[in-house]
Length: 255
Image (cartoon, rainbow, N blue to C red; front, side):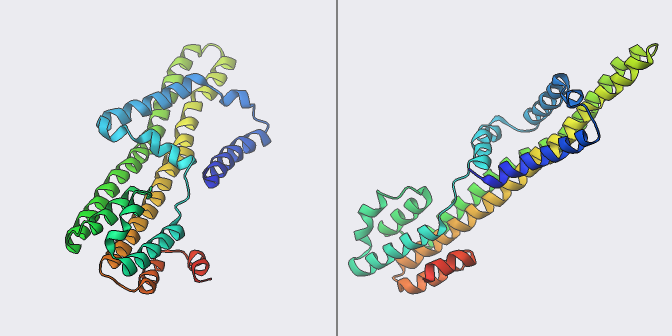
């Protein structure tokens, strides 16, 4: 579980609701199912109209990844690559055939398989770089969907507020009901602006960070695998791969 996502969401909501209650606001006055339906339903409709189905199918998985994101074990992958480098240098590339079957990372598995099969290094580089670029474009698209939702939600919220005011205008003869109706109408605006800035836009940024980390990890894997194919010294490969790691991870590897 990505604890920062949970903390950020809870902190944002609690700060707003807590501030409202400190000013003696009634929490019931901002709980309006109709406003939620207008904002969320309208935003979802706008998203469906904006993007083809193929761009929306992977959203649920991406969203789960924001809240339940397994930490990428870059240090562990470096250790594995060095292990493969030592073994290949000692027994030849063909000795890695059994190791490939145990690899769970599809990118690492594919790259190492190409090396074992004797594919030209430039072909391997071009093939895997193309895969990285395609994957990057796909994930950028997911982030863009949430960015779009963050743009649509406040506007849909304003539409909800206007609809509420239209209904309120029918109560002009009753000042008490008029004031209450205006307050309720603006709840849709709160939902629109709140969902955009506490949910959709932060999720888009989180996806960008997550995908940037994934791209760096794949570039590290590719550099390590090409080093193995070239028969480079495992220690040299290690030093090259450590450039991709954080200072903490580098210090742990040097111990």
